[in-house]
Image 1 (tube, rainbow, N blue to C red):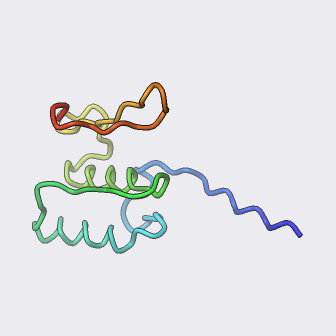
Image 2 (image 1 turned 30 degrees about the horizontal axis):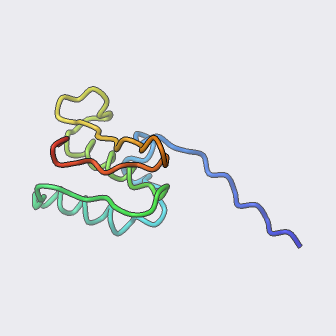
Length: 102
């Protein structure tokens, strides 16, 4: 017997995921924490979004940044810089972003 194919979930932009329509599966606790911290003005100096690839960490982080900056998009915002780790040419794996880069 073959197993049924998992349903295809359309990729949504961060703008589509705002407000009460947030549909990022498995992150309700994180979204609630970030929202409560924002509303209570108890934010900290940095947040680390860490874990396996393809689990919506970037989407959650961008949602939070847009909330902090009060913008619908963070593209070309002067207070936002996206750092992407370079790939090792030999292995193809992502390298670490060093302190000197920051």
